[in-house]
Length: 299
Picture 1 (tube, rainbow, N blue to C red):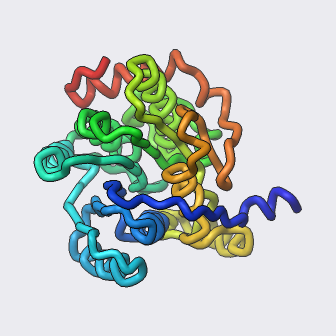
Picture 2: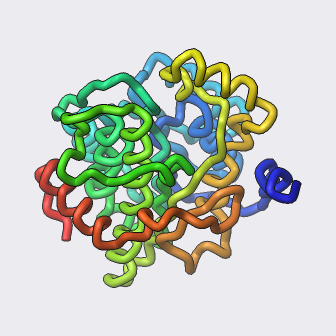
């Protein structure tokens, strides 16, 4: 019962973010939108980074109305296209004086096999590679905005994942669940590797990965009928988007996390991740492979 209570525990804090700038990817729906509303209420300038601008215009109005904060803008970002990611980052680096919090929230889940504009399998491409490149391109600005935080939304599904370095794009054999779990495991390995690099150079930037809970979101749209039926039966044990956003918000604002970095959180508390998620050797090899596939140099 305690675990169930923790699962729905609403974390609350009156921490303010006045004068801070927050970028949230995928902020036009689900937990991304609820995160935007909460952080906007705390006084932050919010940049909603989204692919579908038509949908985002409606969400932008909703976030402004719900938070009473008008300092919210929407910018187009397609994480499945490195050209779009580079254009987005170039504009942010030109227009913004600071980025204090970057929330890598957007994602695709158990979708049919598809490729990004750069020829990557869609789930590893959007969920990991897209955010890896985005973080790389914004990092100098983030370092100039310290204390700063980089938060990546992973999932407990990482526990069923393995990193297939020989076939990261699942070209030999595609299983949409395995590809999703691989991408979520990559999120945690990235966070650990990133935290180590940031710590060594004493940047004042910290990194966090989290499981939001099993949330009723649009990400379910690619589940097959039996899976959707199972989710429907499990609905009393799933979270709303507001509940699902709490751990992201916790990682973004909790003062006690200022000295923590590279860890994994669930239900607004530190959580255990899988052994594979703590394999720093695989993490390093994934880092090198990601750099190679994205044609970047990030030591």
